[in-house]
Amino acid sequence: MKVLFLVQGFKVAASRYRVLNYIPYLNEHGVETTVSLYPRNPVEIMGFLGRLPEYDCLFLQRKRFRGALLALVRKRARKIIYDFDDSVMYRNSRAGDPHSKTRMKRFGDMVRASDFVIAGNRFLMEQTLPFTKKVDVLPTALDAGRYIAKDYSENKERVTIGWIGDHGSIHYMEKMKPVFETIGRSYRQAELSIVCDVFIDCRDIPVIKKVWSQETEIADLRDMDIGLMPLMNDLWSEGKCGLKILQYFGVGVPAVCTPVGVNKDVVKDGVAGFYANTADEWVDRLSKLIEDAGLRRRMGERGREVVMKGYTIEACAPRLLDILHRTVKG
Image (tube, rainbow, N blue to C red; front, side, top):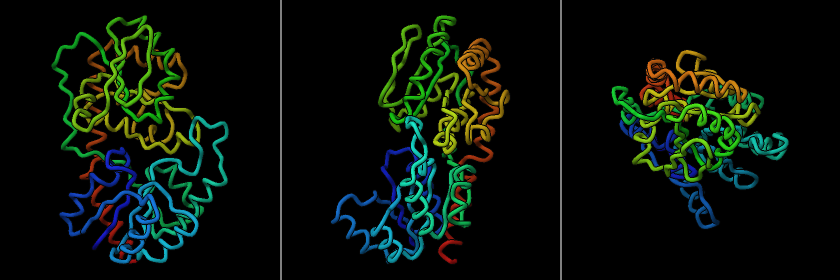
C-alpha cells in the first residue's frame, strides 16, 4: 500500500503528532509512505496532481482543498482520508461570531469528497456526521518512548507553573494574567514558564521564557510542576484535542484546565488535575497544588497512567493502520 501524506509543516504540532509520529510504525507494517507539504504554487500543484494516481491513498492533515482544485484531486486520487483536530468549520476564539458559512461550506465540501474522515475528538466527529457517516475518532497520541516521567525526588526551590503552545494560542494566557499576578503575590516561590515563540509579561510573578524546540521540549515539560490549559467556552475551543494536557500527563505533571471539549475526557476533576472556570477557581486550584507537593506527584502519576493507557502511538497506530486498510479496500 502506497500512501501520500500532506502536512502543514514538519515542525507543526498537529503534523508531528497526527502524522509524522506514525510513519515508522506504518513503514514497519508494510505501508510505503511519502510525506510532503501542501503544494503552494501552480508548478507544485501540477506536480502533485500528476503523481496522485501513483498512490493508493491520499491522506490530508487539517488543510482543505476547495473548488476546482478539490474536484481535480478527487478525480485523480484513488482514495482520500481527511484528518483534522480543530474546529476548522468555525472562526477562532478571538472572532466576535464563531459561525462562518464559508468555513462550513469548505469543510462540508472536503468531507463529502473524502472516502473516510478522522476526527480528533467526539465534538469534531459530531460536526462531520451531517456530511458523511464514514468518520471515526482517533485522539492525538504521544510517542511513549520520548516522554520520560518527571523525577519527583529532586528538591526544587521554586514551583513552576507551565504552559506550552504556539503563538496562535498565547491569547489564552494573556487573559490569565490577573490570576498569575495573584498567585505571584501569594506565593513567592511560584514562577511561570512559557514554552512558545511569543510570550507574555507579568509584574508580580517571574516569567521564564523558553523558545520551543523539539530537542528541548521534553526537558522543558519535565521542569514544570503544574501544567496549564486555559480555554474559552466556545465552539472553537470545543474542537481542541488536549495536546497540552497529554504532554503534561506524559511526563507526570498534573494539569489545571478549562473543562471544555476533550479536556473533560482526559482530565477527571480532582483525580489527575483540576477544572477551573472563573479566576477565583483558577487561583484556588493552583494554590492547592502549589502548597502540596505530594498532591502534585500523585495527580501527575495518575495522569501519566491515563496517557500510557489510551493516548500513545502504541495504542493508536494499529487503529490508524486499520483505517488505511479498510479505506483502500473499500
